[in-house]
Length: 225
Image (tube, rainbow, N blue to C red):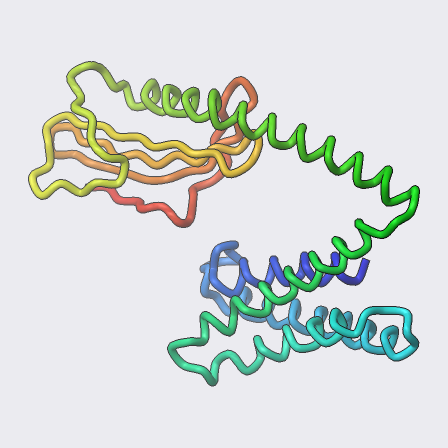
């Protein structure tokens, strides 16, 4: 449980630390900074608990060391200038690798309980993959058609790339790209031109036979003229 809690806290820290998950107000606000510091303190406390357990031979030492080192690396990140983003990302990568190694080690132990668990994980993985494939094949197309209908796109609109910025803006043009990163989740990016007016953006949609807009996609390009 400690390993899973540390991994979740580290993932949330990564979201706040790089502004991917907006905190109260501006994504670069002081609130987000203090939230990241609070998460580091929580991980450090869990790391110290893991060290105490490891000292009693009740927990793996390699996990305890990684859990303590991760928040310390975040605290010293500002001293590394241009490569500070690397030091902000590496702790999460180290925690992910350590936690994955621990769970794999437990998963492949020879015991009846682990055999049942491995069978259930294989079934869950197969179901996950099938749902993902269905979303990628059908959900992406439905979201693209949904955006076309919302924008009233007809045959007069010329097709363009979904993230293009033509030097000479066309009179009528439309581009849309969709991709699925997980079951029932579709990311769409579009570009729209209509007689001097242009706009573009990216958004995340929930798809389950019908599509619903969830939130803007922070890694896309958004503009309006």
